Image 1 (tube, rainbow, N blue to C red):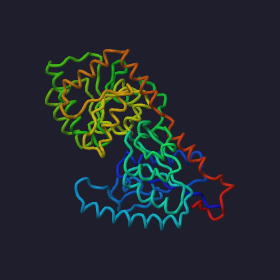
Image 2: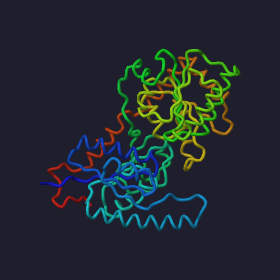
Image 3: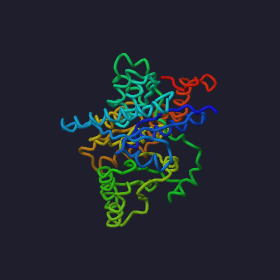
Image 4: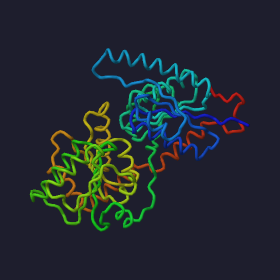
Amino acid sequence: MTEPMIAVFSGGGTGGHLYPALALASALGERRPDVRPFFVGAERGLEARILPERGLDHLLVPVEGLSRRSLFRNLRVLGLLARGIRQVADRFKQLRPQIVVVTGGYAGGPAGIAAVLTRTRLVLQEQNSLPGLTTRVLSLFAREVHLAFPEAAEALPLGTRRKARFSGNPVREPVGTDRTTAAASLGLDPDRHTLLVTGGSQGSRALNRVVLDAVDKIVAGALKRSSDVQLIWATGPAHLEEIETELGRIGWPSWVQAVGYLDDMPVALSVADLAVSRAGAMATSEFLAWGLPAILMPLPTAAANHQEMNAVALSEAGAAIHIAEAGASGELLWEAIDRLLSDRASLARMSEAASKRGRATAAREIAASLDRLLPLPAQRRQAGGAM
């Protein structure tokens, strides 16, 4: 019996790099049941919990991200990187993978470098408008570089830009959901304008404070709210108790629905008319896939300021409004919200711009590209390696 071909997927440290790898592995598996995924991640990344929970074959290596401040720590990081590369290369000798797909983050470095050293086909998927260090370096050796933002190509080394493909981020594809049913499942009124607030899976204290400031001032009468506006607010699990206490203090307005985490984000996206969010790549890609206009307040401490770059790119494309965290206030945020929700024409234009940038079928499209790089089962060499 012929052994399955191996496709290695590597990326992590954060969900923004891990979940694209999982989505691509799933999409490729649907096209090619003869291909078995294997994951490489970091011992200290989110993948250290997620991969075992899902029962996926994997290897975790002791790699860490570079520090902007400590040369001593970076020397240690380089030592760990060398160790990780050796571990991955040793595993590659056993697996003989046909392709390695790196979705970014420091966790993808060892697998990407091992692919180069073993002459294994290498493909990259970059989520942000500003490619990370891992993507920029490995792009010199990759067969293809799949980008979520066309602007990202400008930051790649000149000789590698011909490899770039504007494919989008692999997110869950929008599915037809009845608005009335979806709204009811969230305790919302389907006939009202719905504002979705999310700071990512962990939430955002800074974003929560600005939203709470707006709600507080509306309740106090300092700001006006149209009666047909309601709010579904994913505060982040660690912040829910604090927000509930504050909402209780001001009388908990009936038009505000606060939850720690939205288990079924597509349901919320199907109801929302406008999103308020950080500017992480995967969150913004979901907004684009659904054609959902957004007000983005990027995390100022994100690596290489990539959230700021994402927000600027989408603002210039007409799909979002960019509000900097510095100087943000409830008044400033609510002014933007009220202006959009009361101007259906502007909201429709933003929705159209978002849809144009969205790539709802990105996972399937990238998987098709990976498939083209793989040999057909009957063409596979007996040794199993395309090194």
